[in-house]
Length: 318
Length: 318
Image 1 (cartoon, rainbow over the protein chains, first blue to last red):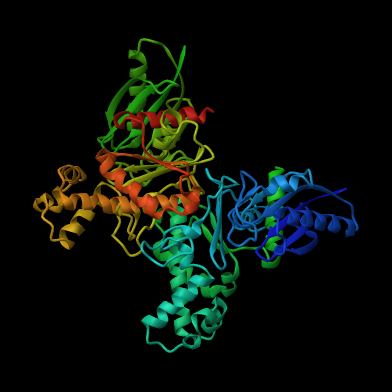
Image 2 (image 1 turned 180 degrees about the vertical axis):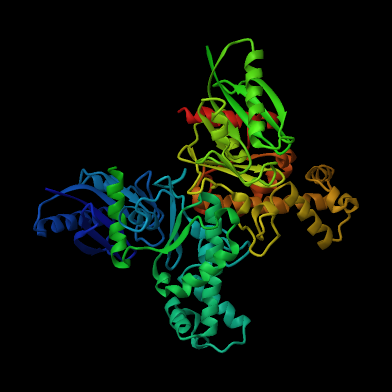
């Protein structure tokens, strides 16, 4: 019988469930809603039913070896989800313990960015690497830090929150209540804020002058930059400069051999990569020069969440 | 026969050598000059002679189990000292290999701050901790980062250079050739630079107004602050604020359970500690609140270098 694991990605609206083999092939997958369950116990019950349905409808019989879960505010040590602002259930949820009542398999939980890093390590471009960092550039900025082949969870289980590194003391207000956090500069919302700063600072003509703040998106800025809009290009430069500084700081902490970029903002491709490389050439200290690569994640965006979660399950079995 | 290791601290002017037992007792110690040797081979020959003399002059017979060495720009993986600006010998020195020709014992090399971190782990306040960081606040700022009970060396062997984290983009010029590095703010020289910034910015009377830049020291600022000099106290506040921001960033990377402060500037005691705690209360994100302690190193300054180096040797035997 073929071995497989379950990879589950819990999102604010929907959750994805997949059966994944050791090579990273998704054998079957489905989605259930995350919202609409007054209690997390009922949601987990339906998650478990969805796994049973996947198993029943697949042709080849599978031997399930474990379950890996990526979820916001997940604590790897405790198997809990703690005070997640984007999930319907408040407080500290003993997610793993509740799930165990349904299925007596090894279950591991971590946050989305850590799961993505494990996905990169097991199935992606970080195969064989010992020290690397993955940055997810979405609405915010998440990170997974791998040292000696292991994700760094730290004393709390909440290590690897590079989005809340202070990159500019006294800088932009962050959703966390502090100022100058990296994700207020380097993320889809960060680049919109940079564009608005430029709209105020510069006299340059720009198509971005017709957008209200609430209507602007990183996609609009990216399209404008593709069309040569000087102000949009400068917004990418600002993002790239702070990203390069964050990478310089990451080198000073864990000296990784690669930094992987993942998530929505990486759709901008070389609009983001080229200026970041240029700022890295300018800012990297001599003792780290040439010691690392800046790469895009090799996982497909639409598979990455399930692959990351399932990679966690496979890795726990090592 | 009692087991012991050799701990060696290589400094720019002198090098200290000690025989250390498993409990961290220094059984015998001596010093030789680092300068005056045209070739590193001759220096290592004398280092080895010094060990023989120590062994000959000690009453109890000892079984040597290994040698640990703390040295500037030491590469743990390769056992080399690479382009150390403060040592007389240039280029990449195969220190461990040369030493092995004299003594066939396990030999480990790392930089001073990493050695201090291992000293704290094996003999000091970090006993039993898995995740902590040690900062050495001297002329510059060094750091040793411990994750899962192991020093982080990274892909290059040069991880843990928090002194070169960019804490203020575009800020003060650093010896490394870049700008805004942490050690330009948080170190003995950093606080002198902050005092000079204040002397220029403020109209406040201060005893510091009588010192030329070349004559000012962190000790003078510390003494002035003890005597209530308002400007000197503000210089400590600036240092404390950047130190707090660096700790916030460290939490976001590895979420340690303790940060240990070590080195000359910590002689200022609560002049440094109290404002740093205050800024931490202000800057630490809610998910790390109460998760860590800020502590002074528990190793005595004059023993710490030998203890750190010997701890490295003991740790390698684990």
